[in-house]
Image (cartoon, rainbow, N blue to C red; front, side, top):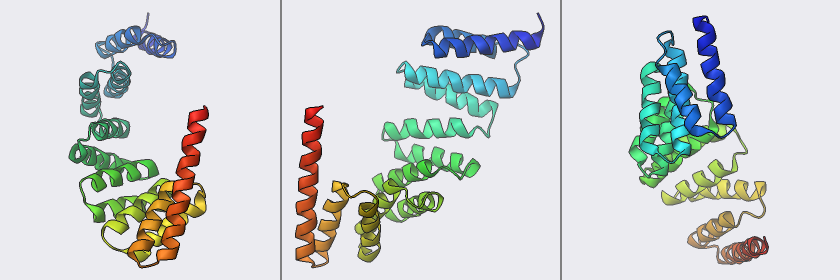
Length: 221
């Protein structure tokens, strides 16, 4: 059997096991590919990435991080590995590390609106509102109707008392989703701070009603 066919068969085996949910067998196949003398750096990087995803599915974050880091060593331009590490660190509330990985990933691929939004969330958790706003703005440049980033930026503007800009974003979020009760609540809070008592009361009442409605719908399910 040719070397090329051996590598191809290992990859087919690995993906087949993954598709069938046989994670342990898939891990064995990817490790076999890694140990193959003919595997080049791109194949190894792909194998490490797949192993990282499989370890994560098994709940073994330490091995997942080790595999993703190995993918980066094999291919320093592995955007997917940086993104995976960023999301894993974010889930563990390790926001400085998450920011580092997000920024490395976005330096390689700056077209991921979701990643910019999550980068903004990490900065927001560290009370770095200006950096958060910049990240949310990048997400909105990529997707002008990205409601999560618009809402998040509005909240960040509120934190630094840029009330007019905050109001603009919260208005847009409500325009995009008329049932967005969190946006109504935050806009009501903002109106109250701005001395607009009547509008504040309307929004806070609307927020309460929508939240109650959502809770009742979930209870029925």
